[in-house]
Length: 163
Image (tube, rainbow, N blue to C red):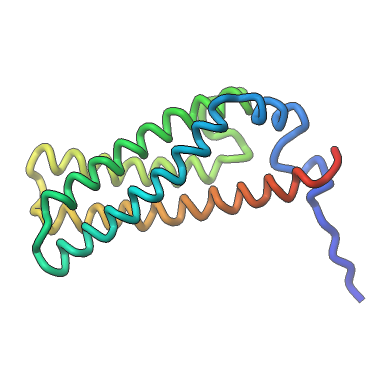
């Protein structure tokens, strides 16, 4: 017979220390992140539809382009405010151990979105090339979003355990 042991009560495996949780709960940046994340996701869904529509039909390039630029703006905003949040909660702007891999993937997402913006401004890519770059950025964004959703779930599970 095997017994499953929950690690949520083990302070070594918890996402936040009691002090970090208190700082997280007191930070106004927690609310900002809570608003920006679903807003960014909504912009992503709309943009994804517009990008795929353009790639399939050749129509709507302007709308698809504008949507990727708006999505990129949300990404930059959530990254800056997220770094501020991380500093308030963990004492460092990025790559706090609790969010190391999420930050690594965030930089990949930023790199691909920034490549899109650069190529758009310089004319380095064709419209199809731009939209394929957007799709690559969006694929990595989905991985990153799943990482954060799993961390949110873990934080909620950890929160139910007395420290």
